[in-house]
Image (cartoon, rainbow, N blue to C red; front, side, top):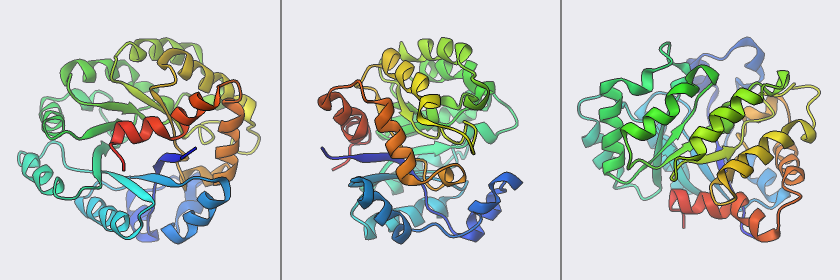
Length: 277
């Protein structure tokens, strides 16, 4: 089975501090680079990753593309572009010359306006993304949930994936309203979802795989095994657990699946969605 981690990051101390870390995430204020991740991937048998943007800068995108060029196990990059820039199409045209650029993400959850994603200038940018065949990662929190379906309706030809199962508050067992929202999103045929970023929404010190299992099972029940993909969210996950702990917890949550179904969640779906080699 070829395993692809559909969601991980790298950064330097300087770049992550610039982003503005909350005090509880202070242990992340250091360099996290490929040489640290690769042995952890090898330990659990992950062969490939998707490197996802961190900063609101084109430099971050180009830096990640250089990392991907230098490390063949980085199969693709989800970068950042300024969606509201009138010349975003030109930027995307340049990025199309980099074969490992597969998609775009913007940390919508950090915008003061929870409906930011539906602004006319943002939607215009998303249509430019779709026009060039790139995907878009939706990173949202509960206050953004009501707008997810509207994005899909507004840009119907844009391949979408919801990061981190849309960040329900697992630590307080937020489930029913999340499941209701998930039911709506799952009815959008091209919508995918990542079972990633879950342990940082759980109780950091006391979480266990059983806390995650209802969320993973509901995601698979609603989206089916063809539209769910694994992501580690390394190194963000390290505030609550190691790379191996995240992977092993997910395996426990997938125990009832067949080997063929596990292969889809653990790699095939990500490779198909992002068009990875």
